[in-house]
Image (tube, rainbow, N blue to C red; front, side):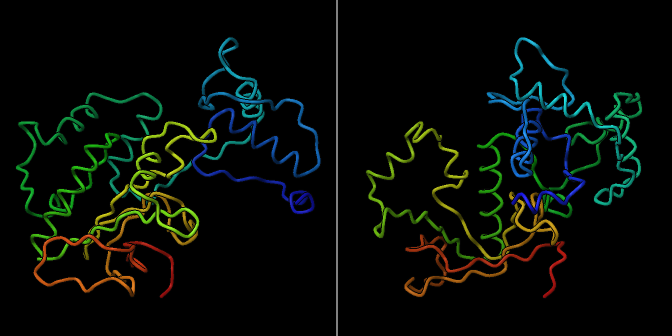
Length: 273
């Protein structure tokens, strides 16, 4: 590892604005260890703070202070000039002015015109394109779940598809967990210093239906665009060989075992067939 890290001269970090100060300190410490160098500034951290935030002497951890000092040593800044994902020049100009806090009255007028509840907004028919394929962006978990469930229900009704419910197949050793054990797992606060996030946010039940919209939430293969935010459509479901046949004209079926595979076709990817 030390030999590998002794060669690179540059480290490129995507989405640097999302990095925190203590992350920078930890990164510096890790690279220093890999290069067999000493890092006298990186100590234990307890919280996170954005890189652009000045050091708070009384509240910042030592890692955050060290991370900010590392950040201030940067002498070269590369500014993105072209945004390939957005083609609307008016919107790009608005985003640029927002970044520097110089929005105009015209920007506010444009934003207000986008509100579907605005009297000046064009008539919205949710049964027609593009609104029938609209994407909801929200930080509210329950709102997101209700939106997804409504979209799946509408798809099953319009396409006359059977909704398959894949339940978590949790095991301990080689046996499936009991209902009592599953309850303890779901209700515990902390185990071995970890919270419920150790489940990676996976739900107990996952609805599956051919044609449903899906979104990647983890960076799986960024060089192929299989990354966070990538969208696609579920086009195939391979059931377990021991799964009973799905009855026809049934609205919903709870699977006995997880599917062997779920095939998703991404709308944009660099992967070759």
